[in-house]
Amino acid sequence: MSHEAHEPETPHLDFEGTTPYEDYVRADVLTHLQHTLSDDPGEMVFLVTTQVMELWFTVIVHEWETAAKALREDDVPTAIDALKRSVRELEALNASWKPLGQLTPAQFNAYRGALGEGSGFQSAMYRRLEFLLGDKSASMLVPHRGSPRAHAELEKALHEPSLYDEVLRLLARRGHAVPEEVLRRDVSRRYEPSPEVEAVWAAVYSGDERDEVARLGEALTDVAELVWRWRNDHLVATRRAMGAKAGTGGSAGVAWLEKRAQKNVFPELWTARSHV
Image 1 (tube, rainbow, N blue to C red):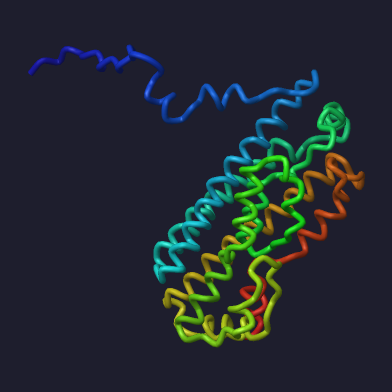
Image 2 (spheres, helix red, strand yellow; image 1 turned 135 degrees about the horizontal axis):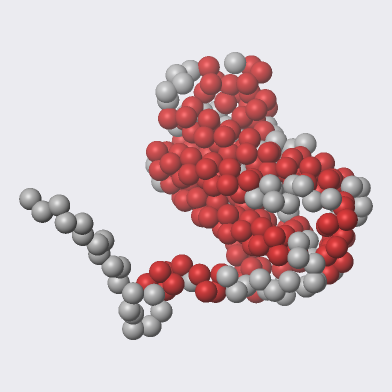
């Protein structure tokens, strides 16, 4: 047997045009989308981190829309799989705060003025994410009137059932006592908690933990917890960087984020636990 060392095969390096990797990932586009507005070297990490967040919003919206479609088709395992993937994606999204979480006021103020009225509050993809959670408001379409595609996508999402609406409809089809007024509510409005829905979840959690509806509830709770952590991490990063100043884009800054952080996603999943 020959013990002669063999050189590893050389990968294919010569292509007619761009590489297949570039054709698929569009890396050249992604890595040339960074156009800073100040001379401060710290602005680049702020811009790139924000762009990365937008990409995570996009994939999480995809997962939740996949889950909602599966629930409409009574395919709970596919919905749970999509929700579980979104949990890992939410963990990665939340980690995006780490590069920004240590900003001092002086560091943030070095380029904050260049942002003008720009604010994360204006993110159309994040708004779609919130709409899927049931936190809807027609007024949130107003900032996007100048962007026809974003406005049309948001308007569609506003009038479609949220992920949680699809969950409650599934529960009703499975024989649970979800009130008609909840099932027939105006889905373009913000979801409000229902004592009857709370009782449904309490009954689910008092039963067989292996039941797929109970497992669906736990997957939703994992999502809700990480959304809450996202909001709190946003609050802490903002408080550290700018204190109680008004936010860019005219928001109330920390005061507005504090109000958001107090709200539970899928509220009855949390309150029902007191009755199990």
